Length: 549
Ligand code: NG1
Ligand code: ZN
Image (cartoon, rainbow, N blue to C red; front, side, top):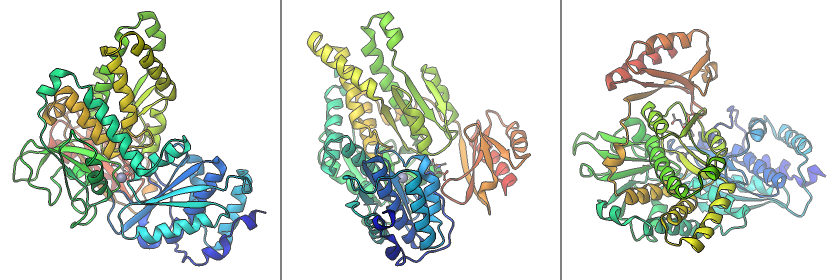
């Protein structure tokens, strides 16, 4: 039965099997595009099986995000729109590394049996397929399609070029029985944005210094999509640069470059000092803001993921306190909305201090959005961001249900009241911000709506707190797995002795903080250092990098 349902034997022989050892890391499989054909084919099989197992629609995205254009990658979106369950990662690793078709088929048959995957039901499996703008994506998409179709009855629905978050959004929407086309995505974003703008307090609108927002599209899919979204927005003046017509994807442009190098992206300007600028990464799941410091030296004031997180937390907290003001104190104690913020060790120390001062619970997880997302989902409202600009705000079903109840209660008693507006704003945020995964386009609209609501300039936002100077370095190593960490990656447990040496270096600096960890996406060890001056952060990071070398 199983072998007849899996017609892979013949098909896989068409794909050359290369020997590179691959591991399904925090971003799926990523490598030089030319070696990925058979890997993507195999992930296609996995996606179809996942669809059968969950009896739901699954997503498969072909992208290498912020990495160079000659790289590519593949990752799977689960029914909720989130990342593939970690329980299936070992299976992904084993099939990707199967040495020949015979082993591959054997692994699949074993797994189908172990997981009791129903191959013969009425649901035959459905996978939504998309890719970013990388030229290699076209043939990889074809390989994915063949992988999916090798499970008899499973269908691949080709969505074409999308941002990663668009695909995740569609998978989630489809499985919830909601409208799930690209137009539906754009309409949901623009109408919830409109809703927030319509409820801006009178005074703020007058204070707000609007002006143009310049967006660096990383020469990728994000710029292209923003051009479409822009047409549905009447309250925003957006000008897209690096939207892919001339430059090379991610080359000297994009959120990763801007955040790590802290300079203006190439072919961007020069913008006037103080102009609000934003940068997306290659698949538009990351977003950072910045302003230039002077017209000629390229240096910027970075407004990163931590600051977006702080802005969102502040706004949400404010709406919750308006909403809860009128409530009976005793009821409030039991029903208190649990708001949690999730960060990683890369979060600037000043942001953590700021959030704690707001009275918000802050927790840490290892790097990789799957960890942050999972943690954030434990709260009524969970806000997570990596410093690099990947993050979102999750609203629990329970909370949304309560909120909707509150809204209808308030519309019959105190329509138009501040409480009702606060409730409607929170609902609009839950519709604007992508509930499946971090999304640069929806994040950008939420930032813009909140700045307008507050009547703030980007400078005012940036001044919420001052970042501690920091420096990130990467050290190429033969075997990154030799470094093993604990405590959300803040402590090295192996090789022995390194942590003591890092501690000794760190102790030499005022407000010094430093950690190292193996990258999940590149063959490097990353070093992060923070201290009270930029020189000190540079010096701490380079002396710790020498320890690793
Ligand atoms: P690695 O290579 O594991 O550091 C990078 C980012 C992560 C995450 C992943 C997935 C840094 C320091 N690390 O992971 O935050 O975004 O890529 O794309 O930015
Ligand atoms: Zn990305």
